[in-house]
Length: 272
Figure (tube, rainbow, N blue to C red):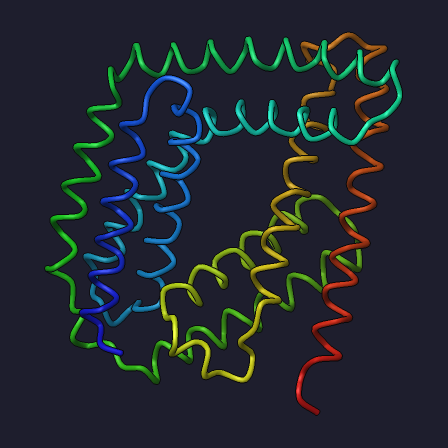
């Protein structure tokens, strides 16, 4: 695999992000989510080539990180609504369902307000899309021809080690911030496997574990987001917050059990 292939992959992901930010109406929030996914995939691809790509890669990565952070509030407001919808599908208790519906109405109102504010400051998200187009145009100036398959595979193996270390730490102490760090590292590893395609599949560590973990850890992060909205400054009533916290804790417990199961099963599948 050549570095030029990775350059084209990164450029395609940035093009996808620009297109998704143009989605409107009922697709607006989905577009934000998909755009942020493409920005993270681009950053994961750049990370495969650092420092060989040169200092320009650091500057592009920095701007992509800032862009993702600017869009994070929009994504969080939508993720909160999605998490409440997920719980509504799972709960069969009428009282809990009423609490969830009340919370969803409040969360949906906040989501709409966040969207209005964002579009007032940046109509049609034109400024953000223009910045991404400029970053996309800068990609060819990086030293893609300096990348070797050996270097990319070494980066991937190091990412696997760091993800495993983060996982061990999170499982040992159970702190939300450690689970969040594990999620970020598992997600980046999954994105880098995606970028490398067949080359990644040749590695002994390759498989579906990193993807499965990234998905489950993402769901766990959404539960953590709901729990954060149940603090003292919450828009939800105190009695509702108690119910929401209990539902969140139950969901987190189930997810962490599923994560542990994935790890055990993948360890059993590894060649002896």
